[in-house]
Length: 360
Image 1 (cartoon, rainbow, N blue to C red):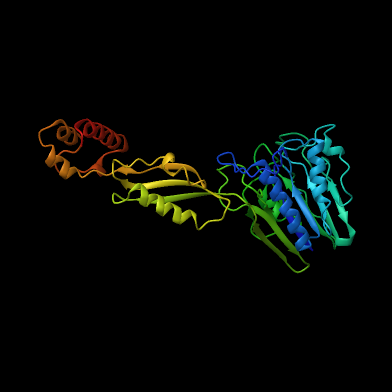
Image 2: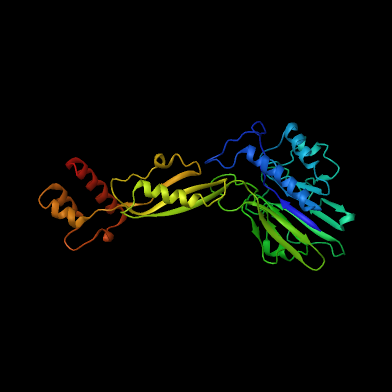
């Protein structure tokens, strides 16, 4: 049996679905999340999955009828696949919510808020267990005594949560609960647990720049003899931290060239937070404006220190204020490495101000 496990799509407004705009610091755009969802439906068809599991937060908030019609229309394109959805903490089923009462296609099942909810698929010899949220938070832990029925069917459990405010989970107990697979949602980074019978699918697209690395979904081939589970990278956008070492020999042009060489090896949708480290000439200013023409970069962080030739400076300024200032921080035989960070920064800032005043 072939299963696609996804969740945390956080679909929102569809007013910009045809937009080509790219999000920077706020995460992948709403339009991009819809496009990725559409690609996921196509992938599910191409792979001929038997089940598509959506482990909560299909929507970023409780959806309106227009959003539900769009999602239902995309699910309607599935040729071979049964869909099971649970509502998460963002799209929870409040009394009278449009999602709870929506007339889904026949091959789509939204599990209700009853903790004992399940749906059987006799043609797949499979029962899917799970339940939807009824409020934004549920601090009551998932019961440790829950276990899979002992019969000849596959039993799959869908849960959304895992932190103190959203269905606390005892993972070690879940691993021994007897379910053939446990499809987890709520945590946006993918995670496969030991034994490969339980996983967080992660979000198909990162929601903000803190969600670095690969995003996608889980692909599961379940047979009586083994569980073949793998993570499929699928996102258009990836937030990637990048570090670039700077030396006193570097110029802004050489830094731009090195940075362009690094980011040109990535994918089209990759976005970078670049941290410059090392030492630079004092006159070089590393700032966002210097790299503003590189749209893949959403953040520039300067962790460099200015490089000064203190021996030469002391020889050139033996009897003036510059020399006196240096010696006040660096008595004879000492080096800047011996200073703490506060004094080191005071040395650099004051020295540069004096040199600028002196015209050096």
